Amino acid sequence: MQISHNAVVLVADGRKSLFLRNEGDATHPNLVVERAVEQINPSDGEQKTDHAGRSSSSVGGGHNSMAEVDFHQQEEDRFAADTAALLKKRALANDYDQLFVVAPPRTLGELRKHYHSEVSARLSGELDKDLTGHPIDQIEKALQAA
Image 1 (cartoon, rainbow, N blue to C red):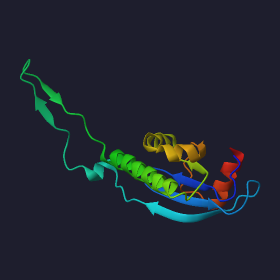
Image 2: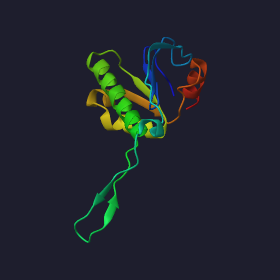
Image 3: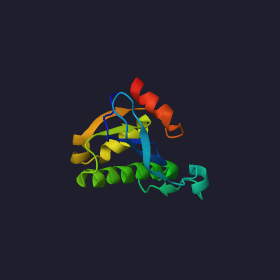
Image 4: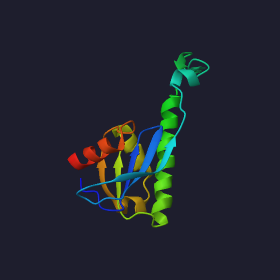
C-alpha cells in the first residue's frame, strides 16, 4: 500500500485505536501517533451478574431460554461506532484527505457499518489485521507489504 504524505492511518481493534499521520512519503512512511484511545472492557463473564433468563410461554406451556447478551462484544461494537464517529468529525473538518484503516475483520466490518459518506470518500485502503499491539515500525512494514 502506498501511504501518501499527510495521510491518516487508523489502527484499531474493539478496545484500542491509534490515529497515525504519515509525516514521510509513499516510499518511506514515517507514521507519527496523533491520538491513542483505549477502552477498559472486561471479559463478558466479569460483566455478567446472572445467567440468561427464561420466559414462560402461554402457548403450549413451554419455557424458552432467552438469548444471552455478550456485553464484551457489545462494548467492542460500540467502541468501533465511536471511532467511526470520530473519523466522520475529522473528515467533515477536512482534517485528512486520505485514510487507511487497519483492523481485525470483525472490527473492520463494524467500522464499515458506521462510515459516513465523507469518510468513505477519503478511504484509500484497508488491511484486515490486528496490529494495535505492534510497534510503529512493524505497522509501517505491514502497510508497505500490503
